[in-house]
Amino acid sequence: MFNLFGEKGKLGIDIGTAAIKIVELEKSGGRFTLKNYGLFELKGTDVQSSGPGMGQSILKLPDQEIIWGIKELIKKGNIKSTDTVASIPSFSTFTTIIEMPYLSEQELAKSLPFEARKYIPIPLDEVVLDWSIIDITNPASPKTQVSASKPMTVQVFIAAVPKEETERYRRIMKGAGLNLKALELENNALIRALLGNDLSPTAIVNIGGRSTSIVIVDKGYERISHNYEIGGFEITKSIARSLNVSLEKAEELKRKMGLRQADENIVNEAMSSLIDMMVFETKKTINSYENLKGQKISRILLVGGLINMPSFVTYFKQKLNMDIYGANAFARIIYPESLKPVIQDLANTFSIATGLAMREI
Image 1 (cartoon, one colour):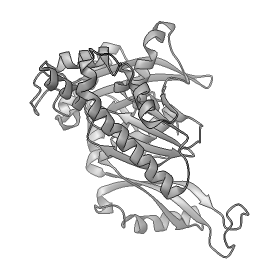
Image 2 (cartoon, helix red, strand yellow; image 1 turned 180 degrees about the vertical axis):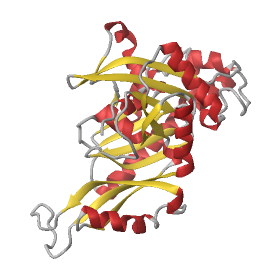
Image 3 (tube, helix red, strand yellow; image 1 turned 120 degrees about the vertical axis):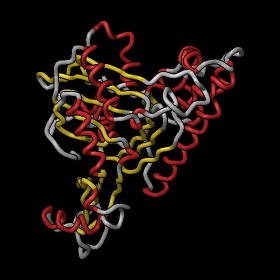
């Protein structure tokens, strides 16, 4: 299990670009139970604005405003847990997979910082560096079909997070009265929530408010990831501009009409080109990985608030002609029966926060 620091927590807090999401889980008898959840979103009405409101990223707000948002969620949700695991967004981290000769974990730990300097664009004394072994190749094994004279090699997943980022998260959680037990890469939390012990090659397409990430996972580990700056907010803006309505009205139309095939669905026309770009980027990333590794991706999981939109998953299936599913972060979690009608919508929205709250070390 990949580790940035800490023990285990009951709260998962995902501070995204468009919202703060909190999930509170309790574990009993080997099963997680959903105790609480909360969502704090930025709102706005000016389609052209890049200032405060929907045009601004939460992560660019002053610390005190983020602390206030977390405290409001805790107060309104009557959340009692304080032990917390928080996510670090992908764009704040440097990650790579490297292959090295393998002698022992002690030798690996000594040599990794020297090797990491080749891949991390800022000085190592300015980052928190962590690593995890994801695969070992033994040339002596008959399965490898290579010379036994070659040394054993190991694939290592390396992550580096600027120290100023980790310190900022510590300040925010302390200011909110929480006990930060661990910081974790958001893709790791996503993999835990959606895949569990499933080791098959999978592409996860996570559509956030400001951006979309495509993560290729194999044997439970991230192999490659690709991020690009189109998310749910850009789609809402496109609808608002095309129909000359407010962002709130555009968001309402998006959630109500979605991509349903209907003659009068002008919302579909306003956003289909942007979603086609998501499809294109997904296909390009998958093809690149398959060509590089000679391995087929068995399926695509879609996650994020946008896939709650009518016909979104169906549209992706038609465009890519692959096994594509809406992911379910609550598949292995017990929840109240009263939430059953909305549980899939919640699972899409709170996937990263759920994976964080499920973390055990």
